Image 1 (tube, one colour):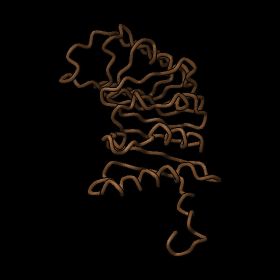
Image 2 (cartoon, helix red, strand yellow; image 1 turned 180 degrees about the vertical axis):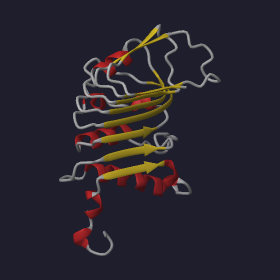
Image 3 (cartoon, rainbow, N blue to C red; image 1 turned 45 degrees about the vertical axis):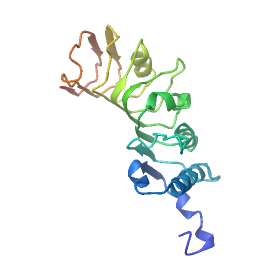
Image 4 (cartoon, rainbow, N blue to C red; image 1 turned 90 degrees about the horizontal axis):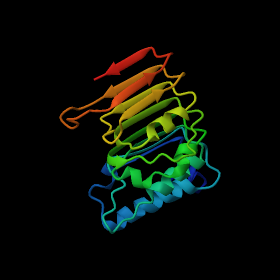
Length: 211
């Protein structure tokens, strides 16, 4: 559209789903990678844009090789400021780039995080009042972060912990009166010693998977 008519130059920015992954960068020169980074910056920060239904980053696009510094945290913030409903992140070093704004976003309905080896830092003022689906994979949690996160998602219906690390916790407390679906998956080849207690208090649960 930007080639056909100058009137349509920014028409592409009105799309409501944005997805980027590392495959987009394969075979690109350094100059083209910089152009890609600048394109994403402009796309997310153009004024007068429609709200986002879904924002997805996949396949370690957060990896910075010293030549290219992707502002992933800024991209996430820009999506949140556009009232995004679903965020799906599969990134390396995720725990270091998640903005605090992610945990206080009232527009979020679905949040999916894959963070191999990263600790998810949940701020004390977390509040996700409209979040219904929370899926966490390959993430690490310490202290009461899990309980704090779940207890401040007041309409949560679908919760999944897949290969998450609770190594330094004595008790994982899952309490939610609204929860309908709960999935707990552990890979014993990775987590040899599961020596903590999982407390589940979900009176409206209709589906439970424990693997």
